[in-house]
Image (tube, rainbow, N blue to C red; front, top):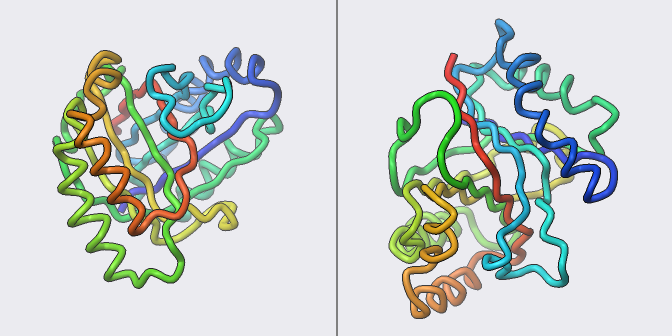
Length: 228
C-alpha cells in the first residue's frame, strides 16, 4: 500500500517559490538512495495553480498548498516514518504530514512513466469526507459512482487514482480522508480538457456534494518518478 507525504516550506510565497526547485534533487540524493528507501516513488514539486484552473480559490493567491508531495512504496511504515520524518524536521519546513493509503486505479497504468522527469502536470487533491458517512456508503459514492463519472468527465487526464486514507502517520491532526490523483500529459490537456463539457462539470460538482464536505486547494506539480 502506498504512503503519501506532504511538505510545506516556511516563509513567504516568494521565498517558498524560490526554494522549491532544489527540493526534489535533495530528496532523491538524501533519502531515496538509502538502503531503507522506497522501491518506487512519484516526487511532486509544487507549481502555481494555472489561472484558468481557479475553480475553488478566492483572491489572487495561486501558490500551491504544499511545496512538495511524495507518493511512495515503502516496505513498511517504519522506514517511511524514519526517512520522511528526518527530511521533514528540517527547520525550513513549517509543516509536514504523512498518510498510508489504499489506491484504486481508475484510469491509466501504474507503469505509465519511465524513471525520471514525467512530462505534463500532476495533480494531487486532498479531500474531506463527511464524518457520519458509513465507510461502505463512502466507497460506493466515491469509488463506484463518482469514480466512474470522473473517469469520463476529466477527459484530458491520462491517469486517475483514488487514494483512500487508512492511517495518519505524521501529524494525524491533518484529517484528509483521501486524495484524488490525476496526471495530465500537458498544460493544454489540463486547462482545455479538465472537464469534457459544461454538463460534465455540473455533474461532477453536483455529485461530490453527496460525500465531500470540504475541498482544500489542489496541488499542481511537476513530477519525477523514481524506481529503485
